[in-house]
Image 1 (cartoon, rainbow, N blue to C red):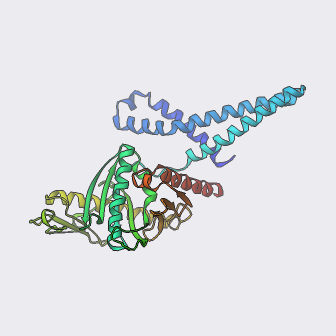
Image 2 (tube, rainbow, N blue to C red):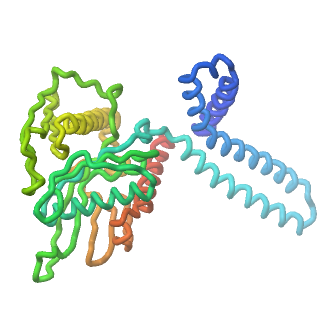
Image 3 (cartoon, rainbow, N blue to C red):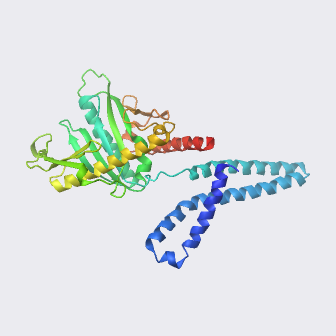
Length: 360
């Protein structure tokens, strides 16, 4: 028996067991258990429905095979053969869907997400593109019905950012955005370029699941917290009190600064949120490295040094280099229309996972 058919039998058994548990008065009286079993039952429902549809098609195919053996009329036989072809085609499609549904779920997929965008090579033009990407992700969040906020920013005189950090909250945010980490390259003519020459700049994007205290244990003894006076682009943007916060996680050397808020307490809370996300991301990457060499067989490694996407403004195109996807709808993408890209990346990742499981 194939790996996926064997697993489907176990899934259906667990699904039926959960149905019985959800009717158990003892379980109903315990809200934590009830929520846990209800979620698991809900997660398994589409798999079991597809599995039962597949078995129904199998049963129909068996009946058709019997009819083919017994039927003598040529015209009727032709109709039965067409029916057999249709059933087999439907089974192939459903088999692909069942394998996809059986892929192990990333436990972080349901997480809210922190995105750090930093300017790289390209000076002012790179900083301006940081601002463009911030707008792209915020518009994407709004399209998906998610909420977002700045955790920290470092604005420049020209209206861009040296770096900016966003928190995006909503349903399966990390699942949709986790493949966006890497180097994003922009090719365009800067407004300050009088000769019309195209410049190439680069921006680094880091995508991290939001962490909580249960997932990341941070000891107060491991933190060095410094306060300083916030700096900015001048005038009203510069605070006159030491409200800015710098937190250093001594064991790892990770440093987070936050100065957007006038309240030292709020800056500290935001800085801790970023630090915990970075620590969770670090743990995740180390775990992946131990398991399969940073999963390089998947959709890229997600490493910051990897150029993953190019935004070419003169040609109006955006290209994702990991999956050889090129779209000539740059304006729409920069306005947050990212679904075609994110869905293609998820599908490519699932295809690679399926290859791995088939070999195993």
